[in-house]
Image (cartoon, rainbow, N blue to C red; front, side, top):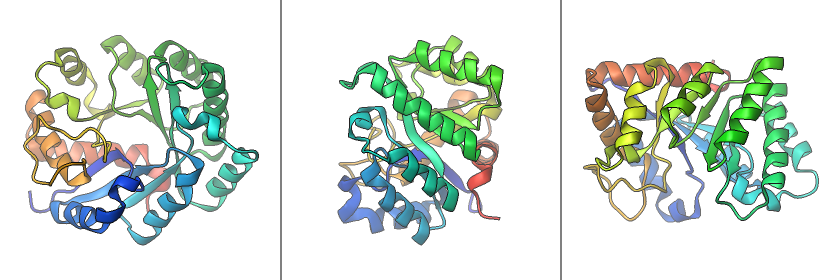
Length: 266
C-alpha cells in the first residue's frame, strides 16, 4: 500500500488544542499517506485560520461556516462576508447543521443553517453537515429543497442515525461519513448502518481533534485525535465491509473526489 492515499473527510486542524503541535500533526499525516483533509470551521473566528492552513498545505481542503453551537455568535454582516469568501476562494460550506442538544434556540439554528444552505446552492459548493437530535427537521429541509432545485454535494459527518435516515439522505444525493464509533463493538446499530450504506456514498473521518479512537490501535500520541489515526479506522471499516483494504482505500478516495470536485486543484 505504499502508493495508497487516505482521505480524512472531516476534521478541525484550526482547533486551539492543536496549535502547539500542528506542524507535527501535519507531518505525521503526510508520513502516513493522508493526502487530503477536509478542514471545517465552526465559527466566524475560525475562517481566516482555515483558509490560511489551506493556503500553506495542498492537502488541506477548506470549509467555512457556522456550527449550530455557534449560531448565536454570528455577527452583523456574516452572510455577506461568507458570500465574499465563497466568491473569491475555492472552499466548501461547513460545518453547519442542526443540534437538538444545543442551548441555542432551534429557530436561530435553523435560520443560520438555511441561509448557509442557500449560499452553498448559489455558489455550487459542497456542504459538511452536523446533525444531532434534529433529524426530522434536517431531512424535511433537504427533501423539500431537493424537490425544487438540485442540492449541492453534501455529507453528514460523523453519522449516528438509523438505517432509514441513511437511506433518506442517500436518496437526495448525500454522502455518509463515519468516525471512530465504528470501532466500538458495543455500537452494533451504527455498525449495521455502516454495512448497509451504499459503498459509493461512504466517507470516513477522524473529526480531529475530537473523538480520540480508544478502541482503535493507533500509532499517534494522545491526548487528542489527529488525521494519521484515519488509517486504523480504514482497517476496521474494510474488515466490517469484508472488502480488500486497498480497494476500499481507492473507493473512499474516489468518493471524496466526486463529493468535493469543485474544490480540488485543476
